[in-house]
Length: 61
Image (tube, rainbow, N blue to C red; front, side, top):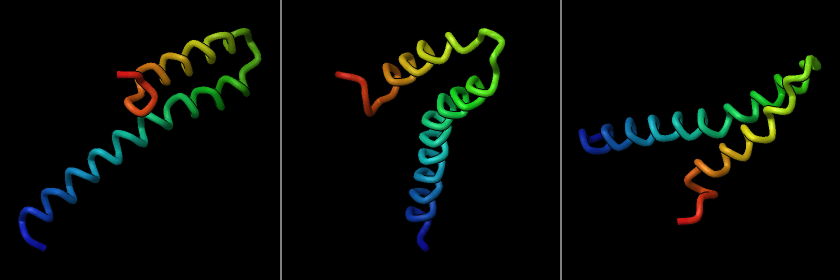
């Protein structure tokens, strides 16, 4: 691999990691909240709404 290809591979790996973290965080949060029944589940809907608003794939710009 050339230096440019190595750099692009590294960049794409970082971008993929960030995207996975962005999409996985609310899903993991919702799963964790589903197992807790002490009244904290009302935060799940606003958390998912905020995730959709801030997501670059779902935002309208």
